[in-house]
Every structure is written in C-alpha cells, then in structure tokens.
Length: 75
Image 1 (cartoon, rainbow, N blue to C red):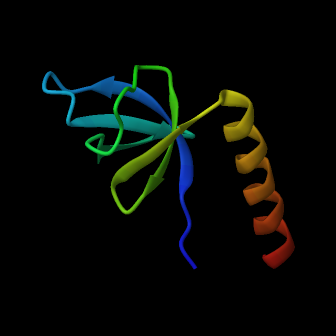
Image 2 (cartoon, rainbow, N blue to C red):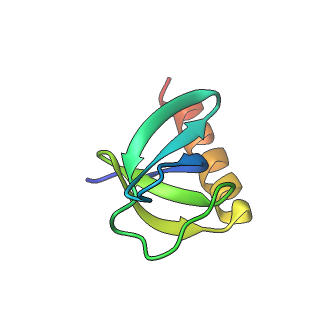
C-alpha cells in the first residue's frame, strides 16, 4: 500500500522544480515537477519525495486527523 501525506508548501525554488513542505514543523525538500501550478501556502500530497497533487486545506486537515486517529488505534 502506498501512502501520500498532506503537507503545506512553505518555499519554492527559483526554477520551480523543487519546494520545501512542512508538516507539524518538520520540513523537507520535495520535487514539484509533477505539478503544473503550485504556490506557497498550497497543500500537496507528498509521496517518496514528490508532490503528487494539490488538495484543499480542508481535505488536508481531514486526512491528517484520520491519520492521527489511526495512529492512536494501532498504538
């Protein structure tokens, strides 16, 4: 099973090929090459270092809440 994590774009490189995303204060550089348009403040789904898709802030919040809930259940 593959898992993509929602994260907020906090920086974009000058060539727009990479960006920095943040999730609960953890920052990671990811490829933005698969997205036609992305801006700082957007939420994206990240999988193995690639931003795959833009999603709404509401969808990101719901997904993160479900993931946290699952973590509590399996812990």
